[in-house]
Structure formats: C-alpha cells, structure tokens
Image (tube, rainbow, N blue to C red; front, top):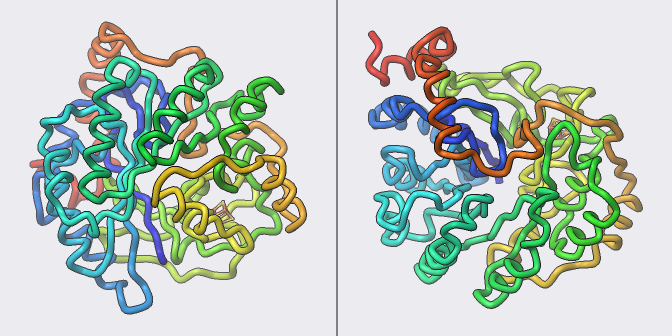
Length: 372
Ligand code: SF4
C-alpha cells in the first residue's frame, strides 16, 4: 500500500506527536492553523492522491504533526480520504482534552476510515495519565486500532514496566521506540538497552535501537509508494530520512518519476519505523508485526533474536551519530517545557511565522491563510 507522511505545523512546545521530546524552540502561533480552515486547500491537497488512487494503489495518509488533532477540518480530511478509497492514520499525544472537537469526532466517525491511531505518551502526559488511558480506552471501544507509543528517553525508562502493564491490561500494544538526538540512540548505556529491549515487539524498534540501517545496499519504494510531505510548502521528499532534494509538490500536482531502487541519499540512515511497518524497504517487512500491534496487546519478542534475523538477512547498521532525521530532539536533558519557558519562546518568536519563514509557504497555502 502506498503511504505518505504529512507534516502540518509546529505545535505549542514544538513537540511532534511522532517524536515526543523535541524542544527546538518554535511555539505554536495559532494563525498557523488558519489555512486548514479552508476546505478548498484540503481538497487540493487530497486531489494529488485521488488522481493517483486506483484498485491497486490505495493510499495511507499519515498525519504526523504537529498535533494533528488540532488541525481544523480534520473530519473533512478523514472523510474525503475515505470516500476516495484511501485511509488516514493519526499520530497524537492526546494532549487536547476529552471534549475537543476532533476527539469527539473520532468517537463518532466510521473507524474504518482511520487505519490506526498512534497514541504517543509524552512526559507531560504523566500529569494527565488517567485521562490519557481513558481516552485510549474510549477510542478502542469505538473500534479504532490504538497503539501506545513510548519514546524511550533515558530519563523515562523507569516508567516502562508500569505503562506496559497498564497497556497489557487494556489489550493495547505497548510499543517503545529509541530516543533520537545527536547523542542517542548510540549513547544508551548497556543497562538502558537491557531495559528497553525487554519490551521489543517489532523489527523497526530493533533498527532504531541500532541507529538505523546503513543504506548503501538497500532498495526501496521511497519516492514512489512512500512519500514525505510538508503541507505548508507542499514539497514532497522521498521518505522521512531524505531531505536533500524535493522530488515533487502536491499543490502543483507534480511527482518526478522514480529512477532506480537505491537510496536517494547515500549519506543518510534508514531510520523511520514507518519505512518498515509499511513494507517499503526490500527484505525488511515489518507489516505482520505491525498488524498484530494494531489488533491489540503483543507480548514482547526476544530483541536479540530479531537483531540476529536482520543480520542473517545481510542488513547492517549506520555507525555514526546522524543529524536531521525526522523525530530528532535538540535537548537531551529537557523533558517538558514549563509554561514560562513556552511564553518566553513565544515572545522570542512572536513574528516567526509572519516573517521570512512565510515566504517558504506555497502560494496556495499562503492564500488560504488570507494572504493575497
Ligand atoms: S532512507 Fe529512504 S530512500 Fe533511503 S533506503 Fe531508506 S526509505 Fe529508501
């Protein structure tokens, strides 16, 4: 199934629901949401996929972040996607409150329209943990496939057993992923690794703990059946680990033909779990494990066995620290931004989205934001 990962806007503490702990310093200015109030923008965006949908190609559109449940017209996005024969997946921190319009919508919509909901438990969720689990339970009760995502920050490993047990009791998969920064995952101590690897449920987690795959001998479907898109400028990149060159634009309805099967960037690492869960990298099909995770609780596998299987298949791992991977965090010692820090950064960046940054937006997006 072809899949596209979609970045929408920066959220309030710059924490993408996918990665969890970023503190890069941009703060939500809610005028960022304005373009999405215009349904014609969403229709134009989705039209790109509708023209490329047929009996064999049904797209999975994955809304990564910032927090997709903040997006105006999320209901329209999901329903129009489904009507065209495609599906949406959502990566959310559930930090929106149980009365939020998007959450209420998800409790009433056709669950078939949503392939899965990845509920990412961020450090600040400790303060509303009961509500987080209640919200997951209600989504599951409605028929959604919910996975509990946990980013294994070295300062958060003490939480894993308790959260794993709670997920197991609710028949929801506890799915931990490596923390990613300039220092991690290579910086994990052997003790850290022992704890994290106790909860491994799929190959993608192994790949991330090993710092990603070396790309030199990989072949994949990136740039054709796997796309990464920034909804603000419309640019299409081959995958979430390659940003050296845009290969198309959704608003211009353009995607260059794929040439060859090798990696688009020999200096990168193949790191994103979605690459494998959606079976886009030859020889590393994690889709069966992922399907089991969507269905409910999965008992952990033996991490060393999965790693040995990957080695036996000839995969090798990226050896060096790597920057600019989607999901990378900028401050290892920072788990949660305080309100005063958020206010301070907001004041620093008050004009950020209205200045030169805005020039990067696609004209169609700018126009939907009210600019002539
Ligand atoms: S990093 Fe992207 S382009 Fe390279 S092998 Fe992996 S999926 Fe393909």
